[in-house]
Length: 369
Length: 127
View (tube, helix red, strand yellow):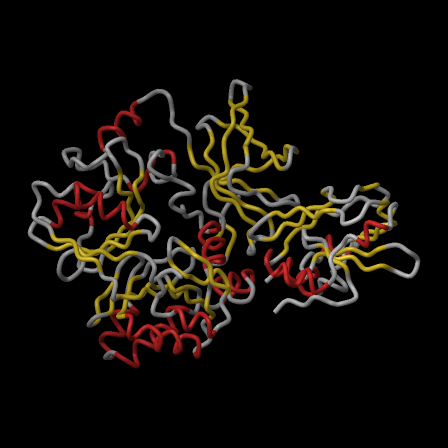
């Protein structure tokens, strides 16, 4: 038996199929992955993501340390509650993890992946010399992601039952990638689905009741299976699949998360990335693939890429699935930067696929051309 | 819980076989198999007229989660395939033992049917 979140009994009540996920007993699906996926695109769904690791950073050097530790720059978080997505890199520029960091009323908060918890914490501990910071894990907090076109309205109902009208107004006024602390709760306009919605960090003891209230308001429970198809439709990376310690953010569609300016800010991995950026040998890129014919693109499949000089080189699918929204297959693939067109090797047959920017569905609609 | 009808025979690779009055056999995948696969989105149907050997791959079922080979439970000629699955592969999820059948085979070696598992043995294997 693995670790269980505060909502484990609730998952069983909803008929979840439970699997081991990074040492946690988590719901992979309740009844049907496609029904869950569609509920998030059309109405609202709730995900228990309490298995993810919350680390609070305090101390006089918290900001300076995070500006050294992370490739994106927390100095860009102007207001309390602002959040950003970033990679945490090693000296070679490889991605140790991807995470969201929030500026809190006191200090900062990071939410990192569950499977990378130990190595992340060890890395953070090892990079503290010269900085006065304190790291505090928050295992007593649950995280609920409520996502979908109706998600925010329903969350506002739940919030209004617990907090004042002013507090509700602060939640309703949240912009994308901002958050608000209400007592022991933190509500953030973030997510992993390409829909509007929030992620709520709240005490474990309150999570089951909130879960019940959300379900009673018509929100569907969503398992990890649909979490994966939703994030892939949104073109979002999954750590350990689309990137890892051997992959540069420049080869993982994470270039936008690197804050190059101010040039004098030294962050871990900067030198390696600058070298890659200046090199004439362009690094491989993470591209979107679309296959409208029958069949499903899967992680690990070989991609035969034709370059501008007519030669071919292999790429690889890092994440692939059937898109329940688009009714055909989509994938992310790491391919040579100079790829002109490509085909995927499915059981020995080379099937032509379309190259698009990573990102397939946003707010319920197809986004690529 | 999964259903395991008594009147069928099963392969350890999760196909079911029903012997018809004319001596042909109808084949599909078990309720347990469709549950494991989850939402089925494509089926590469076997080819009508093809001759298959027991335990050889004859079809591929793709769900959102995984691609899974379907093996011929017996040797013989494929005399019919369920074309309806092309447009409605989810029928294999909703009705694995009836409308979701995959194909019919005219067995070339009917003794192979006897080697398949009965419902209780197969159900025990799926526990």
